[in-house]
Length: 370
Image 1 (cartoon, rainbow, N blue to C red):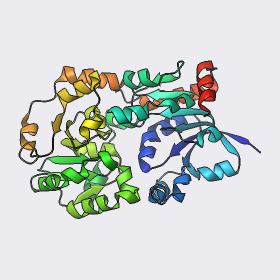
Image 2: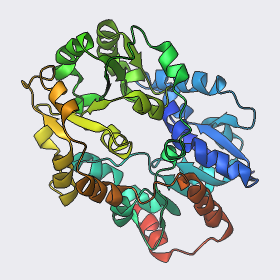
Image 3: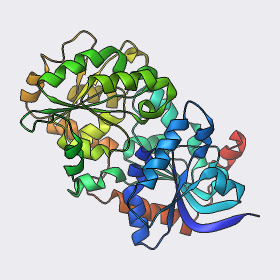
Image 4: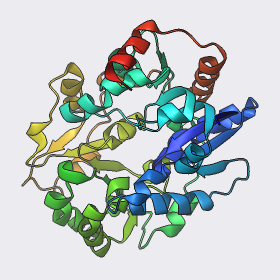
């Protein structure tokens, strides 16, 4: 028998998703709403993904808060429990059975042809509301006024000056405050820069504090085992998705990445950013105006170019051109006032309390059999 609970569930795969939701959950709780975490235990049955689930469970068990409960998705489905609303970062097949209403919270810009085609794919019609960062993703996902531009809730603490880096700094090995700090945050899989750039990045440890932030895929997936083993053997300071990205950005002087969404986290934090190209880069480069603008404010490196001899010149360069920088950031992130999580909470509440009939989306869902 179906049981609808007057709660808001947040669907997560990794600790990274918890940080995505954290401030929005706090804002909802301040307004009197009960929130739960819904753990995607379906991946625990897949050898490739099993460690991601185990790591997420361990992370949740160690969160020091007693106002939040977590439930495996399969347990909820088995007992016929359905939430008033479920918030998720992208579409999962279980969502239609988990929530009366479903809200998408963007978890990254997803830049480049391949990531854009996935991020803005057909499955967005499933959602009753999509919480957009800014005009860029709103234009690509808004269906019959289902979008709401709210900014990036994950960055509220950044803009409210609430970042405490003491814990991160205390865990660093051979960290020298007098040195500049380089944060290397690659993506995982075939588009990662790890295989082709790791030897050059290792050399930077002579002159800089180097922190490697593993993508949650590299952290957990069986297919990434050799990569993470190599990284741990080469670098003194390696962290993963259990660490809040904002803490790392706070202590970083420059960010090195590839096609990871870290590009935009770095720019939003006002950091100088390097993009490492690989022999696959041209296969997914976007030709959009936004991509052209991005190339004006980041330093892009091709294979064979020396990182070690060029970093110093980057540090000595003038600050990023404000007008160009703001033009790009304004298009991606509409608000930088530290209140995006409040707007997210208000949009979620509005979705539940004031449901709107969306004939176009319902027709699309029926045609797509979602």
